[in-house]
Length: 119
Image (cartoon, rainbow, N blue to C red):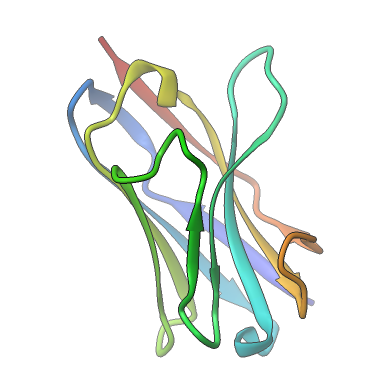
């Protein structure tokens, strides 16, 4: 069974940086697309970024393009989301997700980690 555990959230001032980690286990992740999503209070969950594990190909939401970077560490089965130039509107619970042999469909989700950006 695939398990995803996020970490690295916290409180940061606007303009600051955070790096989220997603430790993955229980699967052959070279066959997965890994994604980051976020959900702010009172809003629907939204896509942030994804990476195709095998190729390293990435894709970002327009709202984070140029500020966030998704990457993976093959040896540690971990996906990262480096977040720079954070804004108060980036405040949300961030979720890691894994999709087997798919680009935009995700089968597994982590429990989420809170990111709060103060103005």
